[in-house]
Length: 180
Image 1: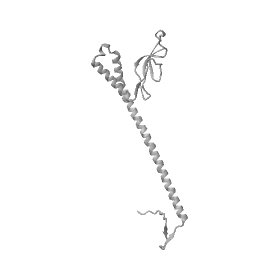
Image 2: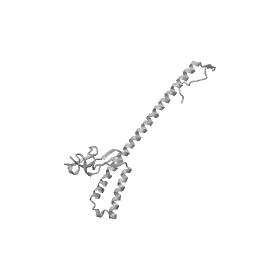
Image 3: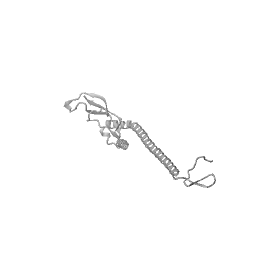
Image 4: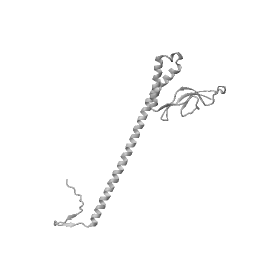
């Protein structure tokens, strides 16, 4: 393959009769400037492409992280009904059975689930005795408050279902009863 491009000569060029012709210094300076411009242009193009690639890589890592968090939250939402069942069992368990070894084993499984959820960044939403917060609580029932029993209006006195958040983000609101 022969290229028809003119290659720069920095020393001498030949005349038609075979004798070398001296290139003048101005032409050499001009060729050098052109080469420097092209080199700078290629370098800046490479730097832009490298920066674009690094930005793309960073965005992809963030997107993958978001997908992993979404999948983790879906797994947690599948586990929460199991925790609810353990809560119901523990509340309704007669005191005489709480000392039974088999029951203790079941309650240990509940603790293992709680520890597993903590490692995933899941925390329970505090409810009983707290002021109602619509961001984290869902009212199931409002009961007139009794000042004689020390209740205050808008305070949660019973939790029907625990609420959970993961890394500060709500997974499921707590279902509560409040005094009005």
